[in-house]
Length: 343
Ligand code: PEP
Ligand code: MN
Image (cartoon, rainbow, N blue to C red):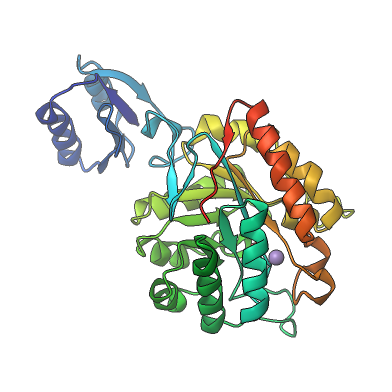
């Protein structure tokens, strides 16, 4: 159950409700919202106690979440939450572009991509140093050296960086290299041990939807992050596995307006891993922003034929520039603005 208190409710009154819950073995969490106290009961509240609390005059609204997620539930915040990645704000009514190569492939090429990403008008640089590859014989990423190349390239153009973490043992390396945002990949969305560890890093997390995860399961994973210390979660729809084999995955835009109702978290869409085919990405990116996404995440490479992973879905530099220009238009059409340049 989530309670909304009347604005201006005294702290002692909120505390009294919390103590009543705690005495009954029910854990509570207070929303970081400043506007008014919002309290989430983590555990199920017995009917009699729920009624008693709901009748208090300072309690103006109560919500019983459909799922067992609480902290990521829409009602836990007065407004949709804003997650900061370096100076970039996701979820504040501005549309953001995240772009970069699938894999970090070397110092020079990373720097080349960083410049083209910044020049195209994107605000966050991506690149994988630890790659989740289907085949053990495929390029696995440069590991720590890749993190260093990514961060240096980001600093050279003044863009914050995001990179995938696959193993909690690599967390100190991500922290040491000051990777601005940690990505949990689709294959690890339900790696709960990893979620718990990453939640404690004090960094925002880009949580990709699992290959066959329902929205419920996805939000439970986001709840894991929030419950274990990371309220700064950005959801990323990247296509799901369906019967359709014409494309790599099926981009599920249906859930965008639904997520707006169910959670306060910002949502970005990755049409690259959904389509798997570069020429399909621009219309899917347009559709994503038009459907309300807070951002798009795409892969780009100056020479896709040389890419060490996912070359078939890599945009060319000019295509990225055009895509960002279109995102700017789509943002305006939907009453928002494209995030100001940060590089
Ligand atoms: C990636 O972003 O490079 C990636 C591997 O994505 P996903 O986890 O969505 O497949
Ligand atoms: Mn990729």
